[in-house]
Length: 111
Figure 1 (cartoon, rainbow, N blue to C red):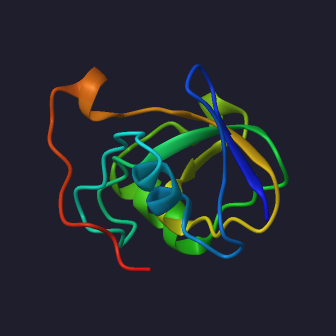
Figure 2: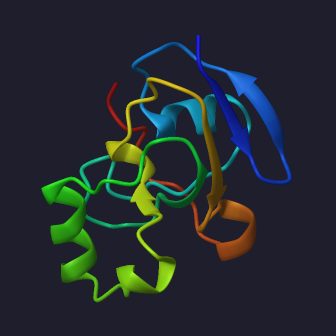
């Protein structure tokens, strides 16, 4: 099974194919996900620090464009955790959490 490492929080093992947003939430990382995992709100974004997960889906690119998020500022390492299925080891830094934003997460994303 792959390992997810969260900068400053630790490393945990997850089931292959699990959505990253759920893996984070299930392991005590309070990542935001206000749209329920539909790639619309961009609150579940993470910076990829390690692992082969840097290629955006079309859904993610549309979400970033709609929110006017400067994707290029992150040198192609910004992704939405609701669109990543963990298939190998990955290291991330959550961008928005309950703690650093003061917001509450939305409905739990679907598997």
